[in-house]
Amino acid sequence: MAVDLGTQDLLQLGNHVLQSRLIVGTGKYQSFELMQQALEASGTQCVTVAVRRERLYDQQGRNLLDYLDLDRYIILPNTAGCYTADEAVRVARLGREILQGLGNPGADWVKLEVLGDRKTLLPDPVATLEATRRLVDEGFQVLCYTTDDPVVALRLKQAGALSVMPAGSPIGSGQGILNPNNIRICLEYLKDGDPDYPVIVDAGVGTASDVTIAFELGVDGVLLNTGIAGARDPVRMAQAMRAAAEAGRLAYLAGRIPKRLYASASSPEEGKITGT
Image 1 (cartoon, rainbow, N blue to C red):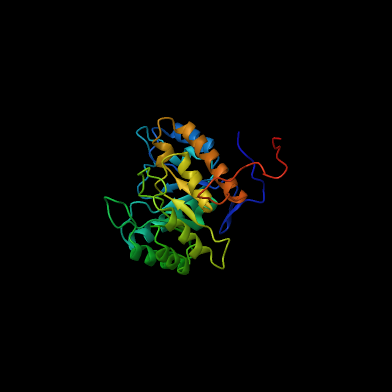
Image 2 (cartoon, one colour; image 1 turned 60 degrees about the vertical axis):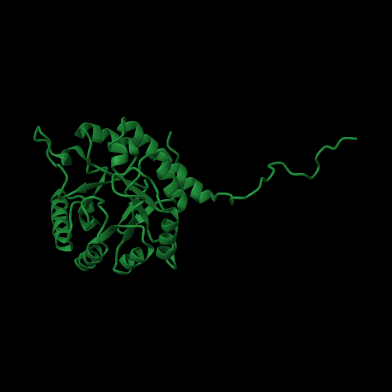
């Protein structure tokens, strides 16, 4: 059963307000029907579509977009598969045109990926920064995928990125949050003097505990795809990811106890019964 965090814990991303803090991808599912079921189970309100690399049509000629309820989901187009700034800018423009034609409110934003290496799928920081500046100048709200390098993250924010999205681990690796300390430093740098600036972990999530850990660190959202689509039972995993996001966010808001080297008794010493 989903936990109601209330209307006061909404995620503001530029012009968009989301109650769910999970953003879920649409790729790698065995069928469009299975994708539909998993998206519904995740509770997401925002789904991301790879404009260049996504298989928009299946073998039967069916269009992926016909299986997305545009009254329910905001589509976040992304530039996955791009390796230069020019390529990413061109694909972002294409995504905007597609969504403008559909009348979807996601037409004004883009998830920017500019990859530097086909084996690791790590982002190219120089090309990413260049593309961010150019897209911001064209009026895009840019959610920017990057490494967990705090200095690069800060430069992207300074370039005008709506949200910086450090990777938990390489795309599709399922390794979870490999370097929580770097995520903490990214949060410190990005939120210094701007506590509401949205930071979203993107990439590497493999299971529900990874999502919980990300939220307990203090991030504002998690974007994932393979962790659900590649699971043995994607619908159940989507439910698990939803519950994990709610648990992690609640734990962060509640504030964990400090870690101690030694034990600390749960019951007070005062007033205890003593023998005679």
